[in-house]
Length: 71
Image (cartoon, rainbow, N blue to C red; front, side):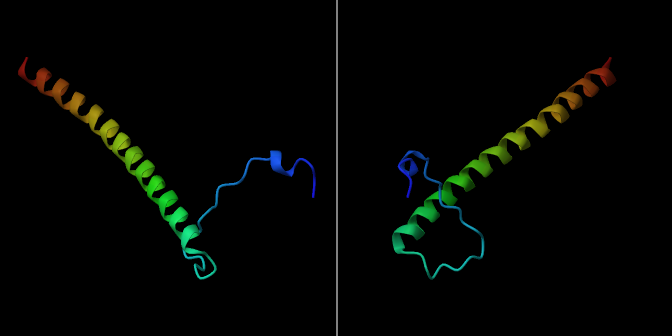
């Protein structure tokens, strides 16, 4: 064991979908559940951003096109 082992940042546990859960403690399972909930929230926020961004050009284009037809 090296003197510098404690200086290294600890790796976050990574959860692999479908992995064997029988070897994990209840605390480890709770940590993974919390981690996955945070990741789901991050994914949902990104999806919402992309949905809003993809609607914006269509709405702008639709308004511009409507203005051009009336003139």
